[in-house]
Image 1 (cartoon, rainbow, N blue to C red):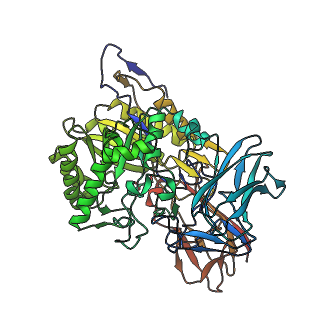
Image 2 (cartoon, protein in one colour):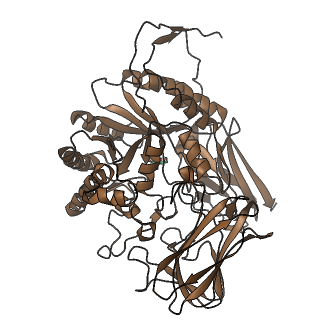
Image 3 (cartoon, helix red, strand yellow):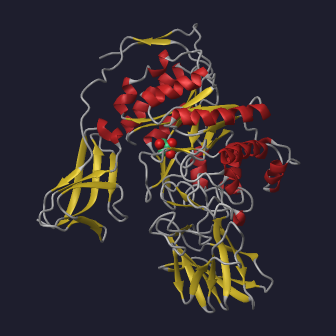
Length: 617
Ligand code: AHR
């Protein structure tokens, strides 16, 4: 079929803001530690805990030769950095880095640092090697007897490797903390900086804004702070004050997505990055209603008042003069000038709209009383339609809120079918911040469906003011959520088809919509089929490498069972377990159906399920 598009250059449509298309960074899929944050040492401060992930211990990612144990006692480096390593005389510890190891490139410089304390003094020997031998000349560090101090050494890699190991050996007994190795060549050579290839991929988008730090990361977990009074509460919601100041004084925390977050990449680094790439910073703070399956309104007025004050302090941290309390913290970190924060989001994907709105209203009143021109962004629910969504929109509309965040993850077909979604939005109501969206897949047709949809966003640029694809990053070896825009491992990164679409739109933002009409649009109706599941009947069978692919070949789910089976639910008569990296049915009457835990959004696909059977009848 031929389609004709008619454009009337003399007509004028809505103005398009330069900031319309942005990115949403969340520490999901290990996007921060082992990702955008350039630190090469994993679990550098020995704070990993079973609260972060049941498989963790304080020595996760470390191997010990000789005597070493992790201690939390009054000899600690700081109140909020509680664990440290007590290393015996003549002993050593080796870090395994991320993915396959510590990745280094021939000729590149690397900066090592460690906080150390040795009552009788000691000499540390620091080496970088892989199975093939040394990767840089070893360094010796003399540790004095005057208590905790930071020691540094520089390495130049003599070979390229992706399987490096960093070893610290001590002649005499010593305490170690914050064992760190950074590439000198971080993005813009900034200290405590970002991994260059990943930061450059974001910068190449020329995003109008950076929404951070989450997502579910923000509105889940305890709302208490990390203090003695709250019992050194772990599993806290992301709270900005945990993430600023000297890195050795920052608390680490359990990450909602099942690992530890060091907060080495914190609010200062996010603001700095947004500024570096010319994007508007757009932070999200928790509204004291937990979501993402935790669904609970926190009824504690004092806590709410503290979070509201924290939010005011955040604005002072971003914009206040270097003489103000929080502006001074920013200045000490290296940025006396303000970061020019103009938008702040309260809450994320709120599925208790009434409870959320009661709290949002208090945040908004306090923020606008102190900072009248601050745009305070509100939320709709996790779905793009239904009771919760309608209630949230009504509350927002009635209260004259300026911007409301919507999220949806749908099939490519849905994106094609809903191109006109915003044509009928009320022009006098709140504007839309499409804070998270993606079609389910990283194949070309996903990118194409998103591009088609973005023409609908742009046509409605008077209503849709901001839009960001999500999630931004995924470490290919640690995926909680797929698809993602940019993928990486410990030494390489690659953009998806979806990334190219975002880049196309972000680097070609128009000034104004020129109205156009088309003779017809392609027929995108049709049956929606498929289900995600694997039914198995064979006795004593074992499976490995289960893969679910969409009709276009894109992978929707893959599991080689190298981790646990928590992602699956099982029904049936047989017993099953995950052993030696395989799914095993161990019972004669076994008849199981395993289903990837609740993501009904996948139902729109034609699915192909393939599993490699490694034993059994
Ligand atoms: O983008 C991934 C997740 O999707 C976000 O954390 C959450 O807001 C949404 O459910």
